[in-house]
Each structure stands twice: as C-alpha cells, then as structure tokens.
Amino acid sequence: VVAVPFQVLAVILFAMTSGMVQMHGGLFFNACDVAKTIPQSLDPPPPHDSNFARICRISLFGAPTGITLTVGRMTRDGLTTTTVTQSYMLDRNGNPIKGISLDWIALLTFLAYLVGMIWKRGRTIGGQVVGVKVVDTAEPDRSWVAMHKAIVRYLAIAIGFVPGLALLIYQRSITSGNADDMFTEGFFRWLIVAGLLGLVWSVLLIIQIARKGDPVYDRLAGTAVVRDWTIEPAKSGE
Image (cartoon, rainbow, N blue to C red; front, side, top):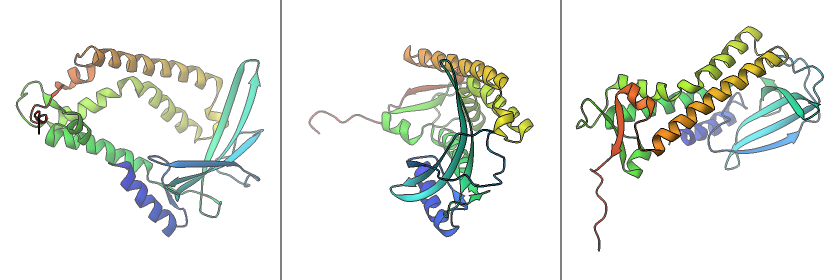
C-alpha cells in the first residue's frame, strides 16, 4: 500500500536524476556482483584491510531504484566470524555520491498511514480484510480512536527496540559513521544485549496475542483489538 507507490516514484526519479534519488527497500529484486575495483577517496573511508567489496543493484520488476557499494573486512578467529562493512550510494554510472534516499520518507509515510487510519477509521486496510478493528476502551462504540492514543499505541509497540536504536544512533553520532570506529568490540557486546531485549519484548507480545489478551502496548494506549461485526459474513447459499 505504501512502499510500492514510493518505489514507482523512485524508478522515475532514479532515471531523471541519473541515480541521485534512490530507494532500497520495499518490494524489490537485489542483484549483487563482486566489485572489480574500489573507488578512491570514499567518504567515510572503508574499513582498514578491507578484503571484499560488492555492488548491489536494486530494482522493481527490472526497473532500477538504487545502486549500492559495500566494502568490508571479514575476519575469522576460531569459530567466530567478524564482519565490518561500510556502504555507499552509487549513481547510474557507478560513481560514489551523496544521494537522496526515499526509504526514510516511505517509512514516515507508513507510520502516518497507520496512525491516520486508526485515528479516522479504527482499522487499516489489512484490519478490514481480516475483519478486526482497534477501539478506544473508554468509548468502545466509537468508530475511531483519539489521535494521541493511536500515536501512543504504535510508539509502545517499539519499546523493546528502543535500546538498540538508541545505541546505533549514539554510536553513529560519535563516530561520524566511520565503520572502524563504530563497530568496536564494546559496541558488539552492547548490541547483543539490546538485541536480546528486543527478542524478549517480541516474545512477550507474541505470547500475549496468542493468549488472546490485550498486549502491553494496547494497555498503555487504552485501546483494544476486537472483531469488526460490521463486516457481515456471506450467508449460506449466497
């Protein structure tokens, strides 16, 4: 619903701007090849002693939406493999650029879609297909949910992933995105901790939903997911 229109736009803008505007997510096909050469003066610089490089071309049904160069270093110590990479955007001719990505715009639009649909209609298109809707537990007969509750609901879903996101933002801000400075042993230790917190949070939500209870994010927002009885099942013989 959201990503594909942006990808169609990315196809058009990629062609019009020679690759200065790109999109790398959504419904795409990714074709990667080993890079024959590594461009000089990459910014930020690639990891020291890099031992591999690959160029990936992202497309929507064959129409290009983006090109990336990934340069990295892979090392093995016994059973442990450590990979440090740095990625760069390339234009249509394969030159490194500081281009514009539509991915963040698409993500923000997706979040706005979720909040807006719950606020105005109490359900997304997917919710309508499966016959469920979100209601305000204080006023369950109302066909919409207050905007602040819709916002709190989706923010609360991501609580378990906040530590990992905060770690990535902090590490990137103090290293200016330099891979050698960013991907340190200490960073990986904290990333594992943050990943475990996210996993525990996800399992908790799955258990609550499987037991048909209100997950914690609905409790925090004062909302609940219920069967939408306004969608009547087809009668026998019709």
